[in-house]
Length: 404
Image 1: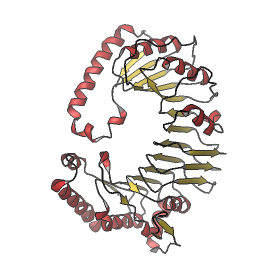
Image 2 (image 1 turned 135 degrees about the horizontal axis):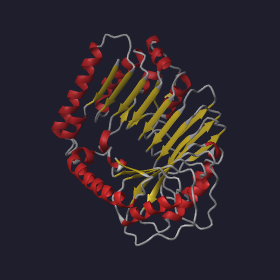
Image 3 (image 1 turned 120 degrees about the horizontal axis):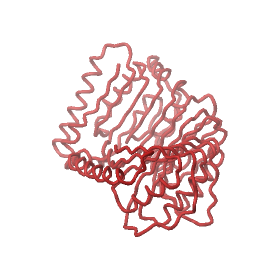
Image 4 (image 1 turned 90 degrees about the horizontal axis):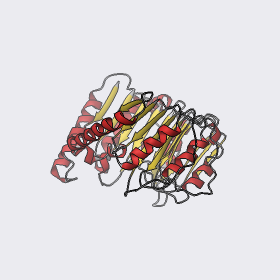
């Protein structure tokens, strides 16, 4: 009942250079592999259907067949990824015609028609709980159709789709609880209103118009968008829900301004931030965040470096009584890292655990990581060894040190 067609080994072997006969042959074998299983499948139901490989529009007829198969089998989790690890290719269109859409104009790629589906297809709409599109051109009309016609759809993830410009999650009749939008370059606005949403993630290269109103269950938000006014824009957009948030991740550098007034986040227990190891005001920024989150339990810092730093500006004196766990992700053991550790031990007076993780999370999904995995793992182990030696001498006995 769980069909996961992920041929990572073949993808890595044919990755350099992209294209060429080896990759064409690998694509053909992959399509034949999935077709063979789909055609021979005799079970009444499929709970999970996942395809993940470098495919383009030349495989569209097979892709159409796979989607129809999954929907007719009452799939609960549908995960489609056609451009894994950063290949450049012509994008693959989601088979919109399966759901009653036809090709439109250049400005409006799809036109809606009243669906005339095979009755068996409705089984998929009734059972679909988790839907993920990665590197697939899926139109916003198709996404809205899923949201309106899948009564138990709780998770929707859309990565790198060119045809999504607006998305609306409006009304309590929509079951969606988790929404994730990443690298959709044409996205302009997201409206979430009177909804059941619990978690929302947006990451992209453009600033969007984000409207959140009357979403009482929303407790988990992650935002990453490049903007010189990142702080002001994000906290304005989230102003209606900041007080109820329990988890907040801001994965973009927040520039320091001495006249900044941080909004209070009284219920926040988990905070994730980019920590600029070469920003002289990084500790000042961090202090203001900690002051705004009096009940914070866990702090996760994504370490980022571009240049060298001699010393940090002096941070305001402050003691945080509730912070128990700090995790440093992408730790490399610079002088600024050591200064950060000293600051945290001094500020978080009841700190119980420091977690150091040398893994650069952004690298894990890249093709270079798959190809150079052995060298990268060796470098990470060297970082771990140095970290153990440093922390063993300097971390107080009452604080647990963990090196991942």
